[in-house]
Image (cartoon, rainbow, N blue to C red; front, side, top):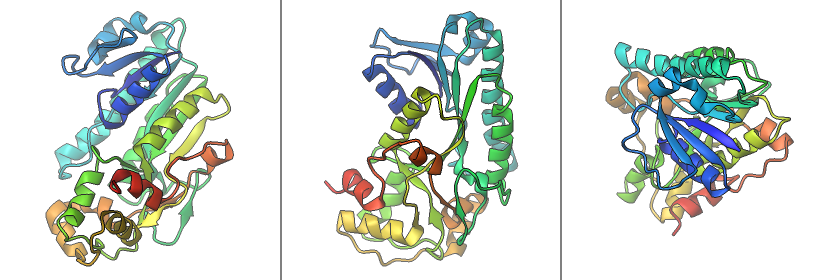
Length: 299
């Protein structure tokens, strides 16, 4: 299969590209700069967004596109950074739409990253893909614009992958989340009751491949583990795996002082479950947080 991956040099994208190459696929990475991408595999090609726009025929015959492009939310949310966060996502979807329109033989499927924040935040509600949209904060408004832009991609099958917190020992948010425990200072953040929809990096890569390969899957798919946990439960799982105490609470006001509006990522969440993936027969390798933690830090 020929697959194009936007954001293919990033955290999730890099792992996905490796998995695609490992199974024998031909992969095109679409990125802002080609200089920092290792191209040792003859089936790996790298193209910039500008080259793709100028010469879309280079991607003629691509059977699937995975759009993972978007500026990191891990920054202080000023008015300027908020605009960049939104624009990077909507622009990427718009560019994919223009690519698809320009191809004689376009992709059969586009897997477009989205966010689990689609459902808003709640300590009591439970969400699956049939739950209605709730715009409660900046992140949920970003997802609203992101998915509306993705819905303009003229493709036979569109998958909107609503991604939770992706866990990996080497990248993403987890090393920062685990650092207080390494220093014997871990504990609940805020009330500790807020939900954390998470997924292991290996599982999100496998889920993307599953969505590409399974023609019955389209529309929203929650990319989160079957057993979401509260912040307190998450911290206790880290503590057990590391053999560290879980004792030092971090008050909400301190998070708000340190991170400003971005503190909502740590202080609020949603109890979201991957009903669509489970019903389609996808099997998570890390369905619960203790299994994931043993792989991430148990050694």
